[in-house]
Image (cartoon, rainbow, N blue to C red; front, side):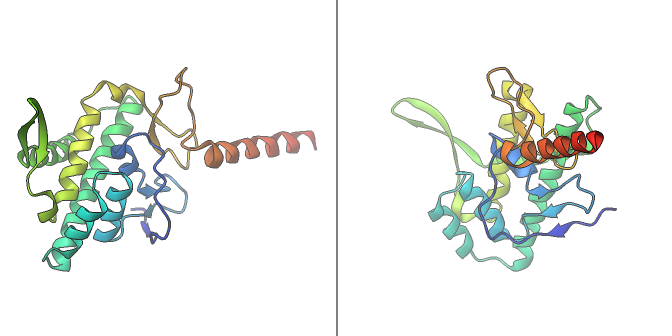
Amino acid sequence: MMAVHEKPINTPFQLIAGHVALDLVNTLDDRFGPTGPQELLTTYDDLLHFLVESELLTDRQARKLKRLQGSPTERTQILEQVKAFREALAAVAYAQLNREEVPEDSLETLEGCFKQAAARRRLTTEDGNLSWSWKGLSRQLAAPLWLLAQSGADLLLSEQSVQLRSCSSDTCRWLFLDTSKNHTRRWCDMKVCGNRMKARRFQARQAVKA
């Protein structure tokens, strides 16, 4: 089994996927790299940091969740549940991209998380308009899991799912939604993987000429 390296979060997350569910999958960085993946979600606070940057939580809500009573073990359990959800989401997404059969255990994990999220929402009305809202969101340590699960459900069960792509770099393969005009986006970030691949091709051409 390939080792997972922990990478402390000192800088903002790279939210380039176009959807928070895919940005979540990308928090296991270098997933296909030769030296093994790097874990960007190493603590519960990292998870809150990710949710705030993704605009699923406000700063105020995140502060309330940080102050909640709960043991380090409970916070770690929530983090591990989020990671399990992330890996199930990744397994389904990459299976769809590769035109492979979707793993049954991954579907079961997603279904369980989707049901948890659905059970925490309530139907409300404002100015005659119906909408879903969350019950006691900032009073539950598991709130990050519910928010991310709902985001994943919203993506996989929507028309947006047909825009799912992965970076053309074999060692990267970060996920993103291709919303380009001609649906020709190939890289997670042209400044990173795109330029790196261009440099490799240039070096290869120069080696042939030598």
